[in-house]
Amino acid sequence: MLGRRKLMGVLCVLALGALPLAAQWEEGYDVPFVPTPQEVVEAMLKLANVQKTDLVYDLGCGDGRIVVTAAQKFGARGVGVDINPERIREATENAKNAGVTDRVRFIEQSFFDADVKEATVVTLYLLSDINLRLKPKLLKELKPGSRIVSHSFDMGDWKPDKQIEVNHRKVYLWVVPKQAD
Image: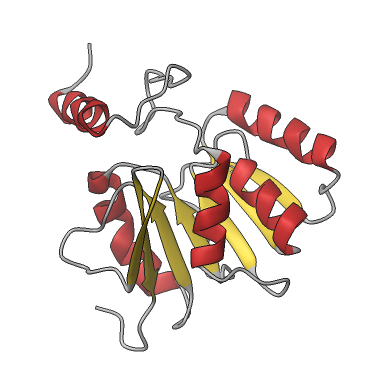
């Protein structure tokens, strides 16, 4: 049985129309696996102005498509973090098929426990309450100027530096300030 919080999260995603048929809410995980459409992936990376010098971390990486795209199309390095071993296997296979295993790696771990201090860009497709729980960690660990990009879900009262829409999906960008809250 889903807890009240998870049920509210599911209802929120459904209300936004962002839950494709491929979505999987697996017991024991904080968020469902919902693949980000490729056009949104590319828009997220462009909005963050990803360059060859960047290290992109995708928290809740699923099948790895964001870090694979960051490496393949932007020349960046990437790290995907996911707690689900099945997703890590899939992401690793996708990186191998894309020929970017020298630029990306995947870690089977909770994104709450991930060490993100080396990241210059962090990407998210989580729920708003998860983003809010991650916000203090991100502000503490990321260097000023690091970029955080979220597909569909904001960070409450932390207003984004930029916001765009791609095929009726919101994408938010925050730049870590010099004096983090």
